Image (cartoon, rainbow, N blue to C red):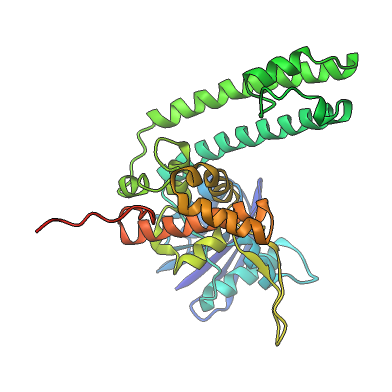
Length: 346
């Protein structure tokens, strides 16, 4: 089988081809045009496999070449970097190393979702980005207000600074001219982004995304009638690709870093090499899930007593994701610990 690997950039791609023995037969730098790329792949007869690393433009390469080769391998960029990183960094060297790894079957694979799922995922990720931007602006307003007032001076008629009464307080608060200008503009930006988020939510509901797992996922707390369920389904895509619940927790970054060696067992901060959108969703879903399932609330209080509120929320998010894993894997409804299962009367 001919092995072809490519180090892909925006304007060019460096292609390396190996024969069935693993001997390099060609390396060429090509412009990223469909004609040039297809011409390079089609010049080799017989079965072919193609590999490239994940990057922002991998989907267009996948759609172009998936029917031209027998096997298309998408390599996990971060895992690949730890394997091939060296003091010699050039596109040709990277393409050669990827080709050799593909030839021997040592491939740090990344999951390839179908085109519809990828498109829906981009829609959802953009929506999540809007929510993150709103939170960022609110934090900036909080910082500015804290710099000008004491917390004890705020009225006790509201808990959230951005509820209806909180907004009225912000608009009436006496601030220096420059900082009043900042607050007014940031509040205007929040209103715009919230309208934009609402438009995204309406479009997502109309999009008609369907999955066989939708019904059972909606039995999980915080997953019914929310954008959360769509993010979970699109980011997980296929629950069978995770070998166990620990694997999906690691994928979502809800496990600590492990620096253990020999007799020493060191756990660090939460992992950052993860799916940040699934992680955000589970953390956001933790609070509404605790309101639905009191056993999660008790678990939260137990962890909070030992650690702190942030660690407790992460623990609930991890527990909720593990429950989702079993619900999807076994295709069964969520089990509420406080509710006795119904037994048929004989």
